[in-house]
Length: 58
Image (cartoon, rainbow, N blue to C red):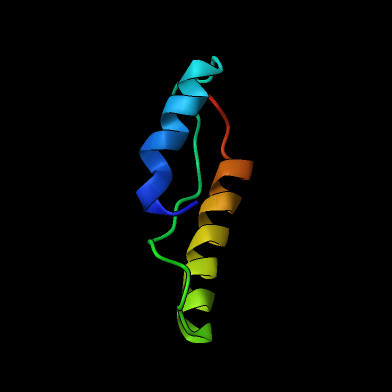
């Protein structure tokens, strides 16, 4: 999701019993970004997603 909606997603996660749920967040906006900017945002998201999928909860 984009950073503009991060707080809303945190609230929804908390309401659904998942406080602190981790998200991959990219800079807002996405619309009207050229391909190079979208690729950069995607690379940032992929890096975060890999971290989320491979980290172990303590």
